[in-house]
Image (cartoon, rainbow, N blue to C red):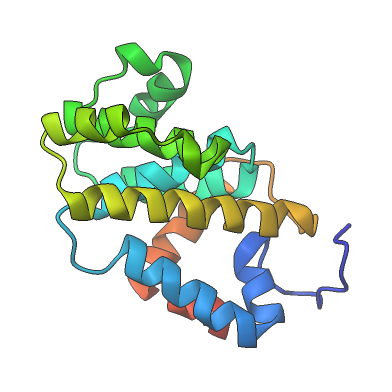
Length: 184
């Protein structure tokens, strides 16, 4: 049961919270829209993978399931097994060196912003990451630390069946994150 009185019929997880308080939900959903969907040198799938990885590390089941589906559905040829390999064996997961270096940085942000060292940034740059990609990775990770704690901290309804997230991801892919706060 949620820690706050969420109206019946409200979507599960973070979208429901964004609808519950549209004055705060609007800016939060717009931030997700900018970070994960607007034009960027990192693909939508790669940015969603960063969000999913951070959510997994933060043990936020709702965001982990949603964003892993978002990553897979926006990357032709990707599958959930690739994402599972990232969790089961990060070093052996089939990742491009730049994305691997960015995920290392994202993981450090979940510990502390100060855990992102000069050496990690240099490693990402050596792998081909730009300053903008490093910036966006840190911001995606920091934002998802907030979204994860928002969702779990209010104990909102979270479907336990992973297949429930397939349709949610399709809905966001077609309508964007901004619709989350509007209830469309």
